[in-house]
Structures are given as structure tokens and as C-alpha cells.
Length: 393
Image (cartoon, rainbow, N blue to C red):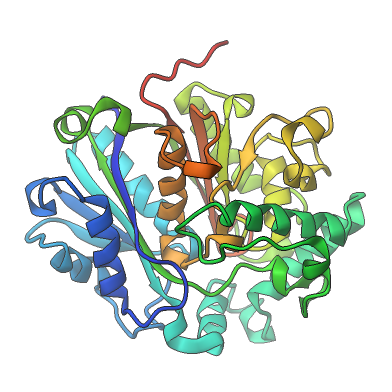
């Protein structure tokens, strides 16, 4: 069975831009293929993660982006899974290469969220909620996650200041990331004194509305060897997706079971466990997400996920030494919904190939955790490995 490799990754600018989605995609593609042959000479198929057609009133985005990549007569599909759309595109690319269906697949994501303004983004995101049980109540994404945060703070010793420290840590990481939307540090008081969005979540607990695109070229080992040097390749050791029910009220609000199951499957495929992971990009659309996911994927004991904001040496017993969201996460790097899962892969690629600059960690194993809907409505997990990683048992 062919082993999938990430042979190249690329990002557009992330933030509020005047560029339409297709131009953002073109910028990410050019970044990924800098120094490589034209995509038409390499790529056999394309999957595009895209959350909503509402922003630009455009469906058929798989075909559109294939056209803009110069690809003709190859399979090109849009993948939808709300904020997990990019990771689902990556999962499809990995699956195709593993199965020998294709030798080189573009996994892409793009979102032009600002095109609809704040009201448009709020409405588009609400479409991920159960129509009969949730949408008609007028509930928003921050309100949904505020329910999770309220329950988490009630059931644990965590405080709003603990959540604020997660935002502070991710802004500090973003300040070291030239691709991040927000490249400045903040302090706990800034978070706690920012306007309330949905109690206990405040403005600085929430990821921003973001435009952007990301691209990852997934290939067989043979194709990767033809394109780039060995130390420019990242191995895809594990890839798994789970779907839970949509409505939040029908789930455990303080344990993200879907993330636990998806990460466990990905660990098993890669022959690693949580303690082996050096860096992780987890879905911090809201600060409480990073705490919950740290526990769900096995990094932290129950109720201690907020310690993700601390250096590894200062965390409670039972924590691993993982570094979380070195990119700045969704909170500071930005959250261009359909592109987020691929942007996570771009950060892991940089860490595992020693290209992360000032934010570089000593990393051989990375976990990507991307969720769509609220918490684990759909969750995608990927384990990535540096080229010559051998996990010691």
C-alpha cells in the first residue's frame, strides 16, 4: 500500500482582503508549487474544502479551482463539512494515494468569509446547526460554544482567566508566524476586558472572520522523491474521521467523544500514541475548544485541558510534553473556514521539516485535529511524521 506524503504546502495571505476566493486559491497554489513543475504536469485529482456558497454565491468550486490550477479532465470535487471541510479534503487525498487510485492529489481549502459581512458569516455558520432543534431558535456559533464553556467551567476548577491564557499563548505564537492574521501579543487583562460575545466567551476568546486559502500536495513516495528532497517530505501516518449527531444538547458537553475516537484511530494507523506527539494543531475556534480537545486526544487529564497555555514543564502530572497551536491556531493565525484544516497541515509541515523559524519546536510527530459543526459533529484527525521518524516504544 503506497504511503502518502506531503510534498508541498502553500498559503495565501490570511485576514480581510479585497481578493476573491479564486485569487486567494491562486496565491496559495503558487506558494506550494514554487520551484516545482506546473500543477498540470503533476496533479491527478483535486479536492477542495469550502464551507459555504453563501459568501460568494458560487457552487462548483471544485471545478472552478481546478480550472484556475490549469487542470483539465481530472476529478475535481468540493468537500463540505463546515469548519472541517479542509481536513476532509486532506482525508480524501490521503485515501486516494493510499489506495493507489491517484499518485498526486491536491487537497485545498478556500473561504472568502468577509464577502457577506458579519451577518452573512453568522448566518452561513448557523447552517451547520440542526435545523429543527437549533437554527430556528436563532442560536449562533459563539452561543453554542458558550454553552460548552459554561458547563466546562462549572464542572472543573478552570476559570475565565485560564481560558484567557490560551488566547494569550496563541497570540504569542501568532506573533512569531509571518503568515498569521494577528501578529501581536496580548495579555490576560486584554482578553478579560474585551467585549462579551456570549458569556463566558469574550471577543478575544473567539477566532476571527478570515479570508484565505491553503493547498497541500499529497503524493506517493515515488512522486515525492521525484519532486523534492527527502527532508522536504512529510509522511502521513494516520487519517481518520468520525461524525457524531449535530445537536449539541444530545452530547456530553465536556468530553469531545468524536475527537477522542478520530485521534485514537489515527494514532493506531501511525503506530504512535498521544505521548509521542510533539506538536499539535487543534481546532481552537474558541479558547474552550483547545482545552476540551487537549483532553479528548489524550494530551491532558480530564479537567486540566486549560493548562495547554502553560509550558510543558509547568503542567499537571498526566500531561504530555506536546506544544499546541504553534501557528497561533485559529485564534491568531486566522480561521478561513474551509481552508483551516489545510492551514493546520501547513504548520505541521513547517515544524516537521524544520522550516518554522522563530516558532520552531523539536518535532518528529504532529497531530492535526479539525472539527466541523459544534464540537464533534464531524471531526478529522491526521498524524504526520517527519521523513525518518522511528517512534521508540
